[in-house]
Image 1 (spheres, rainbow, N blue to C red):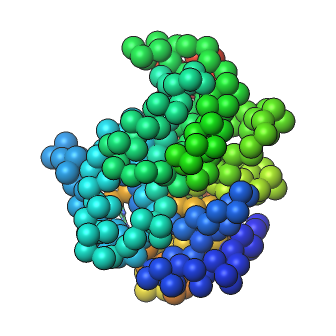
Image 2 (cartoon, rainbow, N blue to C red):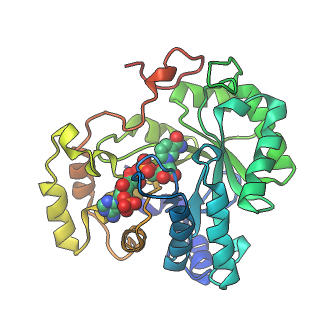
Image 3 (cartoon, rainbow, N blue to C red):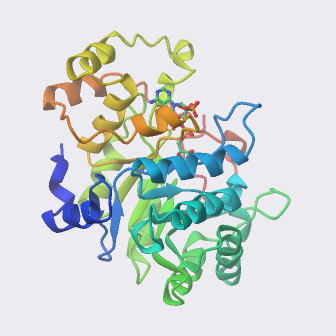
Amino acid sequence: MAPLVSAFTVLTMVYMVAAGSQVPCAELSDGNLMPIVALGTGRGTAKESESVDEVRKAVFWALEAGYRHIDTAAVYEDEEQVGQGIAEAIDKNIITRDNIFVTTKLWNDNHRREQVVPALRESLKRLKLEYVDLYLIHFPVSTKEDGSPDNVDYLETWQGMEEAKALGLTRSIGVSNFNIEQLQRLLANSRTRPVVNEVEVSPTFTQEPMVSFCQANGIVVMGYSPFGFFVGRESAMNLDKTTLLKIAEKYGKSFGQVILRYLIQRGVVPIPKSTNQRRIAENIDLFDFSLSEDEVATISQYNRNTRVIHPVEWKDYPFYPFEKE
Ligand code: NAP
């Protein structure tokens, strides 16, 4: 298993402390620095009563609590609120634009090469930013505007991503939900390497082969749905939290903090979503304890090899990345 600090340098740690946050950075393969915890703003787990304005507040609270990385996407339909939260934090001198890291993503219906730059410009307009730090192809599958399958090869999409980077609209480019074969094909057929693959990783979906492949190829794994089946879905998996709670008690931390720390120690950048101010602060308070190697291995035993996010309705679409059932 990769040691915690393998991807970090003393220089990057100092950089973030200077920026008023305790969050270390990973160095991406293009030389850019990425804070190793991101606030998730996807609304898949949002309660019906949770308005999209909660995202604005969450982003502000997160930046106030020391987050320096926000994860959004065109398809979340909350880039505007993310931008408002950022603007508020800049106004209040909590951050400057150049010490936060913003990730957003290209949706499936904009995969033609000539659609990529205009789609990113639309995202930037909603975010009220001049550039993002990281732009990702959200899924390798492409669709028409009505959601029906299209057949645009992600290698074509990638050329549009390279153009976006060359124009300075994004500092780095990467992918999300690519499987290992798709990453291999992209690496073999492109001039610019993807710096990130954002995929589901949690104690209940540990993804060892994907994490090892990415780490061996200099691709940072951002881990979405980091709490896996431990939030609101325990019963579906018959999960017993006792082991996790015992570890949490030993360190005086919550089970959520132990899960996030576990991912960090596996070299994965977790993306916890919360719109609750207390949990937002909790989810970044991860840098004053360390799990033993045995504890990391024990937590991996929760693996059920089952995805939270599994869009099987696309299983017959070209370039579908996941197992088909
Ligand atoms: P998640 O972060 O694993 O879980 C979010 C849920 O956990 C919410 O119900 C939240 O409730 C609760 N929670 C947060 N912190 C907690 C804590 N410390 N203790 C207990 N419960 C806690 O799941 P997710 O939203 O699916 O994934 C996170 C982010 O990953 C998304 O927001 C999005 O940015 C990204 N994502 C990306 C993709 C992709 O295809 N690239 C797919 C899915 C997700 P409260 O809000 O009430 O705290």
